[in-house]
Image (tube, rainbow, N blue to C red; front, side):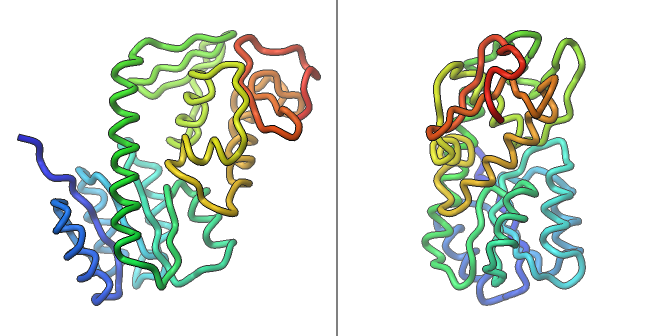
Length: 243
């Protein structure tokens, strides 16, 4: 028998937390709530969570630091940030620290539940695909192991964030195909984050800094002007595409 998915909520608004626990519990999830950042971080570090719903403004350790710590852990835990901080800066910062989604308060509890379900479906699908595509991908000195989630370039291991790995693996599975930023948000982040297409640019720039011989003249992840990006099966000659 499958065990219920476990969701950790770190939220100091007790009324909001109770609503989330009620609706997520109705969906069959096991839900644990922490009202401050210190307790939330302690429970997160215990491990075994399938998703984290995280407020930014918390007593004790703040949500961005918890997000940062979560992304330093070995196991990837999907994160949805919920916060009254609705500025674009905080949204982008949360996403670039590794959050999978961001909802500004006030929001619909039913919408958040729908996003949790969609996020968990995507994670399950990626895990299944990883098991199906268990073979290591090799391309021009680049090696990607989807099971161990390890990448090497000419034998040198790379330190990639979980999102950088997912983005690179997606590219490598579709060599030569052009993807717009919206395409990549839908495929890698789970669904479209309207207005946040430039977070794709940021992740691509970080990937290029790690996998390209010359990030200023990329030869693996190429820009296709006016259309998006594509992955080159064999590294193109330096200067073959603009960054």
